[in-house]
Length: 196
Image (cartoon, rainbow, N blue to C red; front, side, top):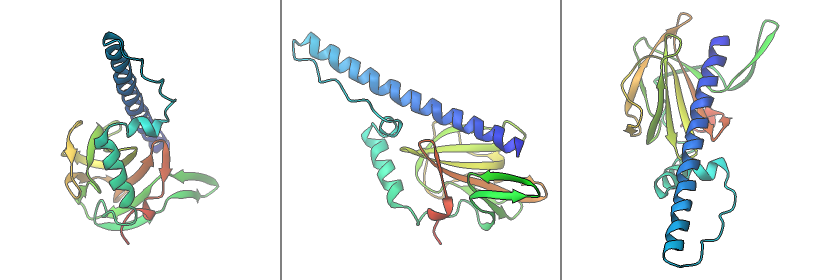
């Protein structure tokens, strides 16, 4: 569980970097528009209202459309790997300890291929503790695929639905994928998004 907490800290930091980069792009575009208006002796554009993190992440037409398409796919996303749920989203108790699973665990066959559940852009690939994870951006939504033995995508690459992105690793005697869906910074229950 400590390993999982460190991993989720890395993922949260990657998402925070995405939000900061999107904010910087929007603010730079607004600054350039104001400078252009001033150079042309036109009225300065009205000051933009303060945006939310979600608005920064969906500020381009491409990311806004991807975001909208992802939302419409709720309940229809394919499984990221062929397998069976072994641990569900939410609070769990193990002995006297309680913990929260911010995703779902899916047990799969040894060497099973993990696939992207929706079109998006790979924003982070890391192997911090012997296994890897992939973070894919879909507008303000992110999907996370943890516990990969190997990865077949790179940061900046656009992926499509059902495209292979890696191979599931064995952890604690199980071939198990940890799969998460995050909206901006909030963890969502993947079971409400995956096709029944």
